[in-house]
Length: 259
Image (cartoon, rainbow, N blue to C red):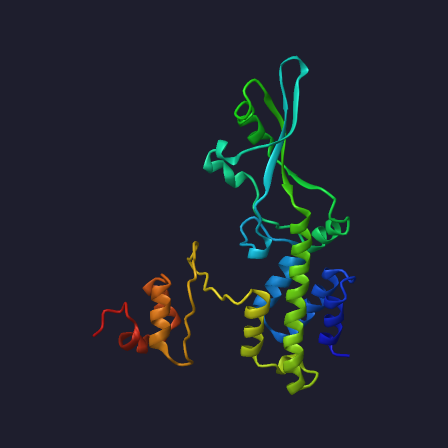
């Protein structure tokens, strides 16, 4: 049986753990020889590191709540904590990313929509803002609430992306038989970009803050259009020279200074 024919039912039945389908996809990624696919599968299986950029579907805005102790044993519990109280430099100490392995979230989602999920504030942050929220009361504990709808949505997103990619590859394999390595590399790359990464293919390089507006279409072999698109996206001239054959730069690159 084709490996792809094993992945499709695993991704579509809604009962098989997502990680099982991803492990099959990891094998497929080696057969297809696509590094971007390998990277996505491995990070979904193992989690994203502190320095990794998480996909948009793993980003979230979590609301914070806290418990307070006051004079004479008074208590104020489960109170919302406005983030405007915190200095912006400290916002990074709180998470806006869901970076754990997908299996961890699938386990949480299995508990049902009424289950609560929270992420504790760092103790140092609680101490620093202990007296900043309610006059006369000290913040004793604080946490971020993770909506269960977001957890369930994340699991469904990964499952759907895996399924859509598998269906696309299966259609192409109808032309080459049971031989994943025979699928054209450009076809695999397009499927990974469109169905795994959501249709945006960014040259990371030194770009840290990137905003894509509209669409740029570059025909094969059109180095002039490619150079203009890269320059317009803020790619340094030095990097454009490394990407495009040097002999063509003086004729096509808008930043080369040529006539």
